Image 1 (spheres, one colour):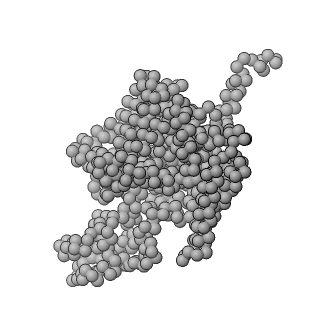
Image 2: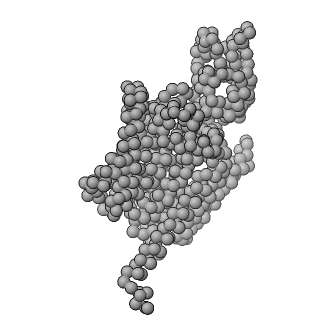
Image 3: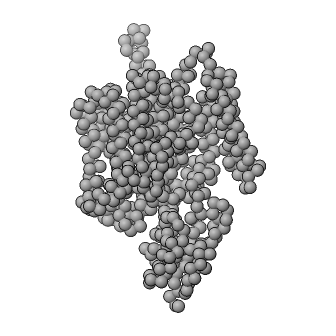
Amino acid sequence: MYGKLFRSGEPGNWLRRHETLIDRLWVLGLLIAAIILYTINLGGLPLRDWDEGIVAQVARNIWLAPTGELRWLYPTLGGQPYINKPPLVHLLIAWAYSVGGVNEWTTRLPGTILTALSVPLLYGIGREIFPRRLEAIFCSLIYLTLLPVVRHGRLAMLDGAVLCFFLFMVWCLLRSRRNLRYCLGVGIGFGLICLTKGILGLLLGAIALLFLIWDTPRLLTSIYFCSGIIIGSLPVAFWYGAQFLHYGQRFLNEGLVNQSLQRIWAPLENHAGPPWYYLLEILKYNWPWLLFLPPSLHFAWSNRNLGWAKLVLVWSGVYLLVISAMTTKLPWYVLPIYPALALGLGAYLAEVWHWPSTKSYPRAWSIILALLALVAWAGSIYFGFFASKPELDLQIILAATALTMTLAAFLVIRRDLQFIAILLWGTYVSLILLMTSEHWVWELAEAYPVKPVAEMILKSDIPDGEKIYTSYPYFRPSLNFYSDRQIIPASADDLKKIWEQEPHPYLLLEEDFIKNLSLEYVKSFGAVAVADPQDKKTTWTLIARDPNS
C-alpha cells in the first residue's frame, strides 16, 4: 500500500499539478483585476476625436451595410473607401453593435477586452522566461498599472488589440522552444497584428525574429515554424490582394504609401517631433515605476546571456530606435514597448525582493517617492480648496496617489519590502478612481463638446448624405460620428463661396461668424450654446439658404 503511494514519479506529478493550479489562479486573478480596471465607467464619456471617431464611423458603416455588399472587406468612411488600416477591430466593434447597439460602451468594449487579456498573457511570458514565479507576478502587475496602457487600452483604438496579439505571438514563440506545435500560434499572432495595423506587423515580427536569432536560432530552420508563419500570413495576403484587385493603384498609393510607409519619412498631418519625443512620453506618464527603470535596464544588460534579458533588450531597444527614427510622432505609437519594460522592471524588483537584509536601498528612492507624494498632496489641496472650480474627484485621485507615495517612501526608509506591494495596490486603486472620473479622456477638454451640437444636427431635416461646412478650423471625427454627417472645416472665404455657389449649402457657424459673413436669405435649423475648454460659451448655429427667398 505504502509502495503505491510513493511510486516513482508521483511526487513530481503532484508538484506539477500544484504549480499548474497556482498559475491558473494567478491568470484568473490577473484577468479579473484587468477587466475591472478596463471596463469600469467605460461608456461614461463621449468618444474622442480622430482614432475613436474614425473607428466608430467605419464600424457603424460595416454594421449598417446591406447584405451582400461586402463592406466588411471593403469598408467606407464618409462615403469613400477606407483603406487606411485593415478592418479586423472595426469588424469586432460592428459585431458589438449588432449585440448591444451603437454607443460608447460597445464601441470601446472589443479593444478593452483584448487589452485586458494582454495582462495574463504577459504573466504567461514571464513564466516561460523566468525561473521563479515572483518575476512573472511583478511584471504582470506593473504592466497592469501602467497609465498609458490602461488609458489607451480603454479607447476605441487599434493599439490595445496589437498589444494582445503581439504578446500572444511572443508567448507562443517562447512555448515553441519546448513544443513545436506552438509555432502555429506564432503565425496566427503575426497575422492578427497585420490585420489590425498593417505594416506594424513587420516591425514586431522582425523583433521576434531578432530575438530568435540571438536566443534560439534552431527554430528558424524548423518546418513547424515556417509553416506557422505561412498559415498566419495567408489571410493577410488575401486581404491585401483583395484590396489591390478592387482599388488597383489607388490602394498602393493611398493605403500603403500615403497612410503607412510615408509616416517613416514625412510627418502625417503635421504630427512631428524630435527623436527624443518617445523618451519624454515614457518620462511623463509612467511614475512611480520609472524610478526603477534605469537600474532594471542595467540589470538586464548585466544578464544579457539569459533569455529574459535578451528579450527585454531586443524588444525595447529595437522598437524604441525604430519609432524614434520615424518622422511621424504620435503618443500611442510607444505602447508596444511597455510590456518589455514591465518584464525588465519585474525582474529587477524580484531581485530587490531577494536582496540580503544588510543591503540598504538607494537613497534616491525615498527622496523621489517623497517628492512625488509632495506634488500629489499639493495638487489634491489645490483642486479641493483653491481652484476656481473645485474638482472633488481630482482631489480624491491625487490624495490616493499621495498616500501611496507617502507610505512607500516611509517603507523604503525603513527598508521594508512591503513598499513594492503598497506601490502596486495604491497605483491600482488610484487608476480605478481615475477611470471612474470624467478626466481619464482628458483630450475631451481640448475643444467644445460635440454631443449637444450633434443632437441639434440630428433634429434638423437635412437630407442624409449632405455635407455640412463649419467655421471650426479642424476636423472633428467624433462630431461626424454622433451627427451621422460629414462636417468639413472651411475658411471664411471658402464659406462665402460655398454659400453663393452651391445650390443647397449647409453651414455650421459660430454666432459671431454669421454676422461677419453678412449672409443673405438665411434659414436657421437651430442653435445650441456649449462651453469651450476655457468655460467660454459659444453658440453654434446650423443654417441653410432659405428656399422661399
